[in-house]
Length: 240
Ligand SMILES: [Zn+2]
Image 1: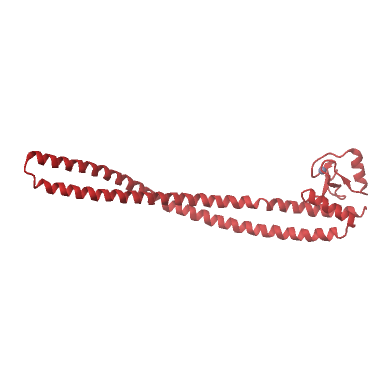
Image 2 (image 1 turned 90 degrees about the vertical axis):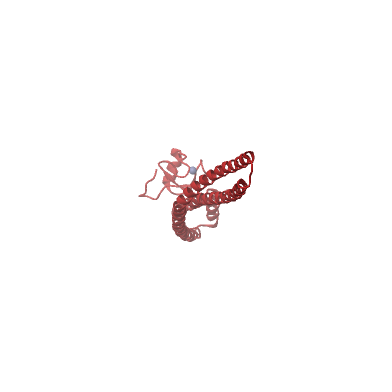
């Protein structure tokens, strides 16, 4: 049994390292999501601006159509002016012309307002497109870096898996089963180091008796707090 202790310490170190790599791996999706969200936000700005420009273009064309109708109508009334024979008819046609001119002036003002907004949108679009291109480039670069980091982490984890298999292969079947069960049920960390008189995983303090037992280094203890196997670090390491 005492021979198992160094093996369990090796497994402890393997699992702690794997847990550190795992904790880096689980951060990756969020880091990727942040990049994707930034690109999506910049794309929305460009799309919103373009959609507004398309809408304004449509409105302006409709108003320009109205202006054509007003111009034709005014032309018709002006032609009538040549044909009127009485002052009353003259004033009536003049009144029609003034009405059309009033409406035309109002629509012209709206067209100018639209053209102002179109100019402003056209002017700001290149900056929005550049911001989108920059976010896309930076996102691609971060994604590539994260993919590289993920590959390295997975390689390290695979190497740790291989070392773990080699170590567990040297355990008695019962000890191996106990270790594997604990590793599965304790978030990948079956064996905890005793650190400053407490479990290094859940920080439960050990009784003086338990500490003395641990110091004899002849059997594995179980943590009252988390159920992990407990070991003092080998002589020379920081410990209880
Ligand atoms: Zn514990």
